[in-house]
Image (cartoon, rainbow, N blue to C red; front, side, top):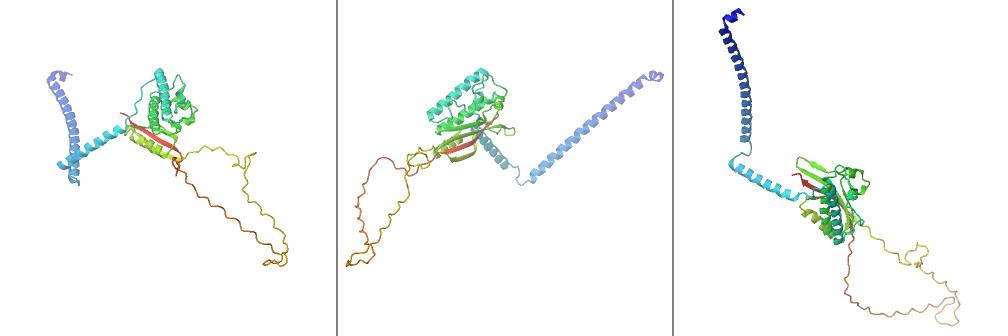
Length: 335
């Protein structure tokens, strides 16, 4: 302590020098680390440049302009595709407002079906929304998923009604709410789920519709889905002959029906042979024990056919109705 007091300035100078030396060392190490990182960046950039220079396509002015033009074309194609996958506009409603929206939507669909003369499964058909049809309170998951599904079902049904399909047999959708999970109406739901593609920023909602139609109506339905701006994609379909209504049985045509007179189709039995009689003596050309041949039958008079003129069209081929089941994906963007 006495030495420090006598050499105070020397001690303070040494302490300051030690601090400066430590700070210099820290600064040197930090600068060296930054320098190493910069050298790595320079080496990486040099490797990238060498790769570009040695590539088959050199990044010259011509190639850069070509790349820019292709980029613009790609952006235009993406913008055009976004127009074809526009989400179906749906009202953002909850509670009492949703009840009014639900009732109006179902009533409008029934009215459109009547105008198109499309037969529905019943007069109170809910278009797969039986679980929400008579409810006052709605459980978790109802909003905004159910209003969006209602809007998509309405858009699809308009395409079907414009194509004049008849009848509409059934429509199914994915379960999205707690009410759907607890519903006992199994014919309203698909086993498929709504999928979200985060990489493409899209949401895919599956639906299944079953209806009867003619081949021209099926063509109009597919054309309607293809021309829609709402991203309706027909992923699969099944076509089979529709069940024909049974024709009423005519009297005498059903031999198995009890109490119904039937017409016999059996060939009548031939008459029994006549006994042989001796021919009279002296009859020329007749042998004893032979029967003279019967006289030849008289020829029927030929009646000329009359041509009957009629204005009714002649039906050469009658087309049968088809039963069609379509699996439709509604693809919409998240943005």
